[in-house]
Image (tube, rainbow over all chains, first blue to last red; front, side, top):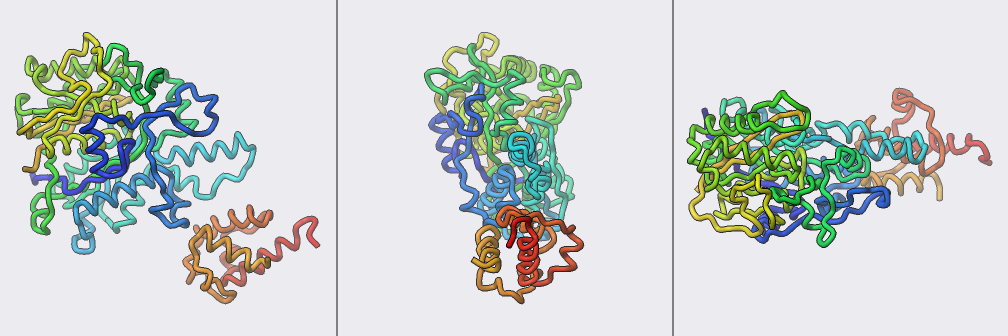
Length: 410
Length: 85
C-alpha cells in the first residue's frame, strides 16, 4: 500500500474561514455558535447554530454565483484554500489520476428550501431555473472537479453525519491502492435554513438555547447536555501519494494511516457501542497500530444524550484502562455539528492538534455526566508535547461508523 | 430606456457580460450564452419585462442567433402583451 499525505487544508467554518482563525479559535476555546437570523424567526423554536460569516459575491462572479447553492460556495471556497495551501499546480500533474470525493448530508438544502418557499409560501410557480443543479447532492463535488479539470473519479458520499469521514477514507484508499495520485476530499453542508432547521427540531435532537450564554449551548459529555447544535461550512483537504508530494516539493500537513468503516445495522438513529467500537478497531488494524499507539481522540461528541454515553463506552471497550489516559475532545462544542462536513472539519482539527502539539478543548464542560468519565480536555486547550497519532471518529444516523487515524508529519 | 438598453443593463449586472460587447450583431455563442445560460436569462427577462416567454429551447435556439435577435424577440413579446400600445 502507498502512503497517503495530507498536503493541503481548507476551512470554511463557524470558527473562521481560514486555517489560522480556525486554529486560533480551537486554541482559545472560542465558540462559533450563536443566535441565527433567517426567515420566520418567530416560528423558530431553536434559533441557535454555528453560522459562517461568508460573502459569496466576494469570491465568485455574479453569473457563477447564481448557479451555486450556499453548500457549493462553501465547498469551492474551501477547495481553493486547500489547493493553494498544497501549492499544487494541476496543470503540471496527470489530472486523469486526480479526483474529488466529497461528503454532504443534504446537498443544496437552501435551493430546495427556496424552491418550496416560492411554491408554497409565495404561491408562485416561478421556481428558479437552476434549482435542480443547485440542489443536487453532487453539485459541490462536481464544481470542484470542474474548477480544476480533474477527470479521475468524482463521487459524493451521503452517510449523514459520517459523510465526509467516509469521503476522506475512501479517497485515501484510492491513493493507497494506486488508483489515484491526488484526491481533493472532504465535506460541505449548509443546513441553516428554515425548512431544514424545522425538520431537525421536529426530531427533538437540537440543543436548548443556553439562557445565559447562547454561545455555550452545545455541551458534549455534560450532565446537562441537551442536544446538538447545527453548524454550516466546508472542510476540504488535498490527499496525495507521499512520493508524488515529495517529488513536486510539497509539504505534508499530516499522514492518513488508518480508516475503519462499519455499520450498526440496528436502528436508524440510536448508536451502538459495538458498532462504534468496531469502527475504531478496524481503523487501528488498518493503521497497523496497537491501542496504546493513540495519543488523542477527536470524538464524534454530538452532545446528544445517546451519543456521548455510547461513545464513551465504545472508547473504553476498545482502549480498556488506557481509555482514561487518552485525551478525548469534542470540538463540536465550539463549531457545532456540521453534519456531512463534520468529520472533515474534525479531521483538520485533529491534524492541527498533531502539528501544533495542542489538544483542542471540549468547552462548556463544567459538570460531567457520571457516565462520561474520560479526560475530555474540559474548557481549555492543553499543550501535548510529542503527540504523534490520533483518531477522528464520526458516527451517523443510518448507522455508518467511520474512523480515521492520522499521524503527525514531523 | 429602450429594450436594447434595458437588456444590456440586465445582462451586464446579473451575468457579468461586458456592455461594450453587447452590440446588435454580437453572436450569442460568442457571448458564451449557451442553452443553459439562455434559460436563466429568459427567466430574468420574464421578471424584468413582465412578460411570459412561450418558446421552447429548441425554438429559441433556432430563432435567436445574435443579441439583436434577442432584443427584437423581447420587443415583440412586450408589444403583444395585453395593454400594450
